[in-house]
Length: 376
Picture 1 (cartoon, rainbow, N blue to C red):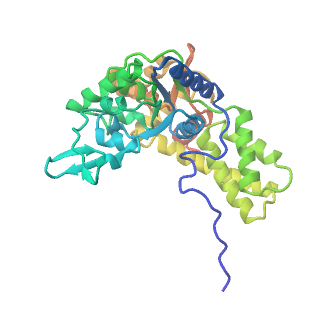
Picture 2 (picture 1 turned 180 degrees about the vertical axis):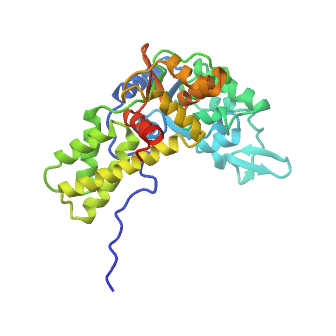
């Protein structure tokens, strides 16, 4: 019986999380390095918020920033609950073992002395915990939009979270403390609801596509270092770069089948192999688009696609023109709601002062083909 060929190694979610071949985002990285330096120099800190659509590389960017943050910064990845729950924050800071239950006191103690529980009072809130530290803290919160949804604090928790965020944002923690957050297009709104109405100058960023140069470097690294490509990689790098349009998720959608194909074929770069990879990449790209519109009703996607179908892929469209088209079906108030939801989920995006555009040009084409021209 023939022995089965083992599958190439790879993460279960190839298009999520950190990446071994990070390129680009230099403006944001430099901006953040300056912020950390200023915080150390002035013994202050603030908040820094990154927004981007699903698949834009937010988590990979956070991972890069965390790795670049050298001493004296202590880096802690936190969950939303750490903004109001002392237990969550202590564990995020690596101090969870300091909690000990004193049976005769019935409280939580910090530390152990002489083999006996030391009955220190419970620290009342996260501000008090951070106040104990005398080293600079970089707190990193991913999926921060959940502060306005599944992890929305209520009651006293809301007050504790708002107080901590305000103190960090204003640099009033008595030491360098920076809160770095990344999330979807509703992230700024979530922080606004917690009292953070204005982000500091150069303390927010929106993730768009990567440059051609960065995309090529990433594709080249995957093909040569992981797939064992042999020969001239230029045709493959050129073709994949063109089809990904610099979108990190698309890079993963094409690179994964490229790695699989090359590892199964001894790294040989053939035109037939490239055709197979491009076909699989387009299928992966389409699956991503389908996921992006899944939370809409089908008729809403169809009528939005119809409203933008007269505009070429990648071109700017006028909001009022689209609203006029949607209003004929849903009425003006509902049309505004649908448009704003497409905007919040970053399927469409503002294009400077000119109007709006589908964030990824190839998604514009897909929407029209799938829901108007029925080319699928």
